[in-house]
Length: 315
Image 1 (cartoon, one colour):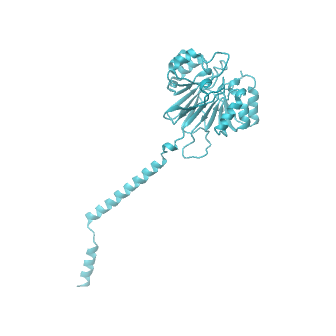
Image 2: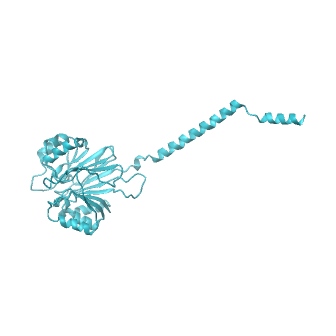
Image 3: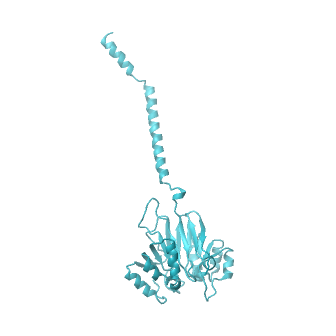
């Protein structure tokens, strides 16, 4: 066989059918596309937290007698360890007489730092326990309404916080607290100014976590309750409400707006006949009360909200 013929035969043997070549290339491309989708899906699934990874928001309505002290534990940002975002908040601190009870509760729950404190108004049964807390647990910052009509001991408390280099800031309606986890919003709903009584000037907060919201209304009275409903009609959608002023008095619009909600009263023995039993019955047959149920813990995953525990009151 001539050399040219031998080369031709070898060359022909290596030639590939064009249609078969295109089919082979198509399969390669399709395989790479499928592989890419698989990798992308894997990455997406890896970033979606499992149910076990989801950390809830917890609100502890601590039994401190005729007073308020609410500890909030916010879920830390997903996928991050320690964060600059505040994950613990204390709204009021009860009175000085019950400060040891408050400290014991914080210790049992391993609260070693309080990132944010909110003093709703300068009455002793709302700020009195903070001196002991601030002396034993680091506090990141304090918000208050700046009302000069304060009860005895308030100016001394502010001076003490200043000596400990704790930042103190005045807030008003329309402000939102910053440096919180992305899933949490804390809005200041009251006061618009300080032209009313100390109770009606109190800071009222709406706390949102996902689709769930809680209302902490401090000691605002019936007129301010009704005004708040007019200014913020959507607060009617709140899932959990701390009934103001330790159980009353309540405005008619308030009773109508929050019937059947998860309702909590923070109260204890007092000379004012609170809570108003007649008004509570109009709200709901089931109302959690710290004077009867002890400390109440509410938990939310951002979708639903439930009472997870309470400590039977034995005082």
